[in-house]
Length: 449
Ligand SMILES: Cc1ncc(COP(=O)(O)O)c(C=O)c1O
Image 1 (tube, rainbow, N blue to C red):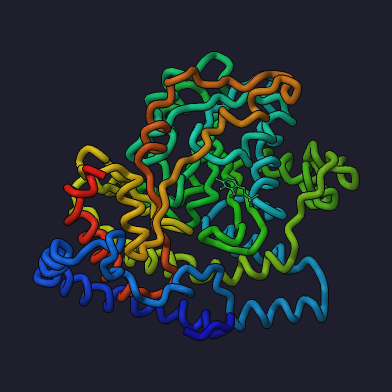
Image 2 (cartoon, rainbow, N blue to C red; image 1 turned 90 degrees about the vertical axis):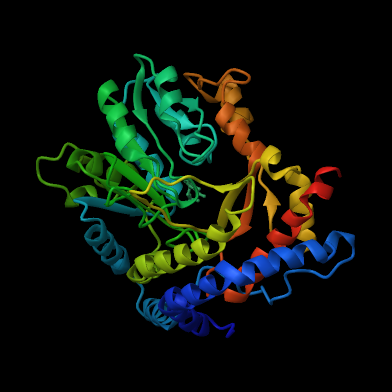
């Protein structure tokens, strides 16, 4: 594989083009005879853990390479360096707006800035509670302290790793004013259920869509369900601009308030009667503009987002559909009307009882076979000092009581991370399947370990 960025671009195009056809052939080959051969072979061949040959021998160095930029990005960034300016930011915003068919968008220097601006736009009374998943990242939650908002940590559904509406029902109070679903690792939340719950309780839906660019629920893009939505464009994400972020707004007032928060030079672009026009120049003390290099990268990457998501998801299916036949191995549950995406990881779960061996023993055996896999134990948000010390908050976060987030605990007992391959990897797919089948064939012995 060509290691240069332009070569990688060719590889990415080839991945997008050939992923479907090639995979189907291999899958069919693997689906019948080959799979039973692998399973039988798995029984005979010693585990790598016990000195047997490794199941995974393919070259993997470039398989997870990301982001993948090409000649177009390089050319446009070079042009920008010759003639510096902010033009690319507006160009990206227009392209993003068209993709989402969204009335208002604002690009930012990162996802945290986009989400922080959205929190400012909410303009909620001090002490207003916001429901957030406990199994998530702190980026949009810590800034709640700037606006006297109160994060309320909610359990996740262990099948999806996403916000549990059932648990939201238990934690909602008269002070709850907003809900922030996060589409974990590219699996959209069941937004119809969340929006129905929000409507019932008069809550604003603020999506954190940082993991799910281009994913859909019932045909509607993530980021188009909530009144506002923020996206990280950091370099690991499905739409990578190295560092960047963007927010979608359905309402002009939200857009103007959020934009005024971190853009001292944009209030003059608002209509004459906008209450935020007068803040031209001073804004509100933050400067959260996107860098034009990021804007170039994001705009060009956006052109292939759907094709790349489709190719990546198809490749995951070729691996996971075969792994899912092994007892005790599952993946994030996606309703049939949900079109998910992936980035960085392929999260799966091991049910130790059904697998007949512990997660850690299975992972060690798989690692010995050459599988890039790890146990995933996530630090739950409520346990971080910043949410526990009252000196950082005028209104303390609402922490879950001991044992009251069983979904998060279950995910932490069962989750494993497999890699997300960003180019065609038919050999790796076959070898990973062989490694899992081999380890599972030895699970009785491993269960006694
Ligand atoms: C779910 C989620 N939200 C928000 C962010 C913050 O985005 P950024 O790193 O671009 O500031 C991240 C970053 O990893 C994230 O994973």
